[in-house]
Length: 505
Image 1 (cartoon, helix red, strand yellow):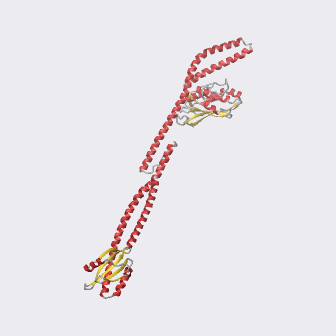
Image 2 (cartoon, rainbow, N blue to C red):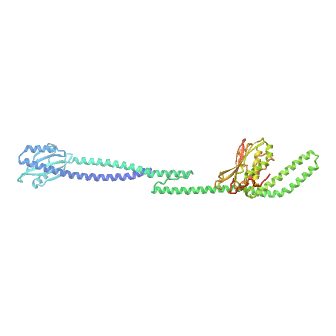
Image 3 (cartoon, rainbow, N blue to C red):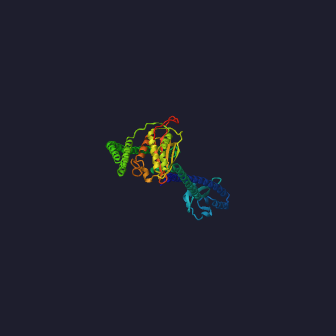
């Protein structure tokens, strides 16, 4: 049962009891008041009838007495009249009383002997009446007889019934009105605030947006809504704190995932440098010596050349592994990245021509300067552009662009702010969707055997991260790849166009 229905019942039931009690007392008081008025009226009628009868008896107007008895029975509240002789015998009566024999002989004897009127309540058949017995005297005080008037009480019952019906109707109207008022008040003042609280509880319970309840009043519901809002704010703060802690934990886990292979690779590379370096030099030197001695032997020369080439490749990989493991801290200096990118493009110009790659560069010299290690960033851009060329074996379009932007770091380690956005986009073969999440893993490569070590993108991402930035990649298989590097823009003095940035071919 809803609270509005309960309140209506709790309020209307006492109202019903109260109205019933009030109706009973009011009807009782009304009946007594009507009875008192009836007695006064009956006494007045009796006095009037007494005066008339005494005049008629004094003048011996017998017909007038009988006519008066008949006329009395015609009144609305008078049942009839009797006239008695001095000896107590019946002289005349209204025809309406002929069916009801007189039975108040003791009262009549007392009136004739004492002279005092007698008022009694009786039943005249099924009708309640009041009997007024009074003495009749002549002008000299002689006894002329007695008279009796019956006054009907039926109108008291009618008045009581009308009063009872009025009180019942009034009670019903008050109950309906009170019920409507209570239901309206409870609907607006109780049910609606409770429904809002229930709705907000559901939203909070289902993990949706933290709800708020409008505080429209200063009563208990207003205080409850205020406390609920305070609880929601605390829950929201706790949720944000938990999300921040989870994000921090993910960052720590990502960092640990980065650090763990670095540490492993560092230990491996350190031992590798000592274990491979010297034997590798010996093998390379012996292979060169044999190739010179067997210069006329085509078969030996071809195979020894392959051996020397692969030894050189191993010699290049080992230092890169050492650089990746050591994670050298960048030597920051104000750098114009556009000029740095132009150096990279100039260095690879011949390779672009050989590969049939068309380069479109948008590198304004007025782009903001950034604090970077120019040698390390040169390596990042060289690696990204080289990978783009390798992804276009049949030639294609290479787009390189640098521009200022306003960005929010994906890990939200800092607030949104100004960044330098450097994009390298090719129209090559693209990267398969299942490989996108692994392209930055150490030693993972999509190139053929002998064409890549799988360290270039890992090293590049590590360098960019140490500069406070990040790398994003978007690729569609068969339609090309876009790598975007974001570097934070610091408040540094603008560099002259001729300022020298480190890094070279």
